[in-house]
Length: 150
Image 1 (cartoon, helix red, strand yellow):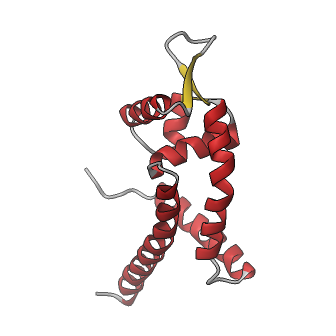
Image 2 (cartoon, rainbow, N blue to C red):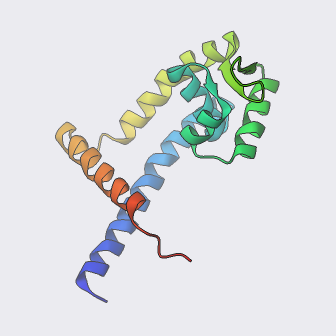
Image 3 (tube, rainbow, N blue to C red):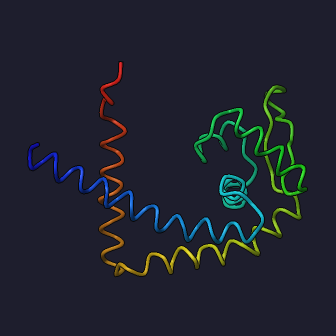
């Protein structure tokens, strides 16, 4: 195996382990709110972006169209999200936070952000800036590179 391949594999392992360690903090915090990580992701997106078409929500949190429908239905059953018809396209629906959903996310998001901040304290602020730039570059390259599939 080449040195270049060895280094790429080592980076992948280190990156995966770092992600898993930080994700553990995120998931533990989200569990305290009684939501799943995907439900939290939808609520967080709606909180920051406002009402969104279901297709936009799907792209934002990286789930299938059936998955976003299921998750929005679950959140609607909990009284946290509602569906609104799109005036321009009668087939399309918006997802929007209910007043109860908005109150919940306003309560839990600051605690969640703090949990992530604590998990990231292992890097200095300049190191975080460098890591952001490096991971963005890596992600863009990987997204543009052929996966070698058939």
